[in-house]
Length: 45
Image (cartoon, rainbow, N blue to C red):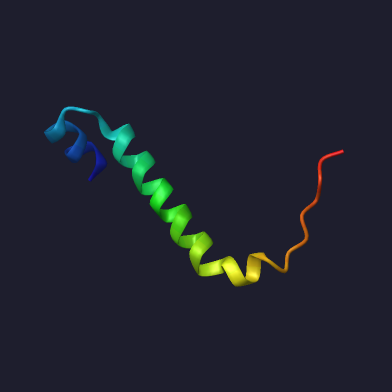
């Protein structure tokens, strides 16, 4: 689908794939926000 949209709009599939990836990540974080708060963060040393 990204290839078709990129071809139609003339901006390539990469833009559409990045937008979908950003949306998917946002949705995952929203769905897991309560659970993610209980996971400790490991600070880099």
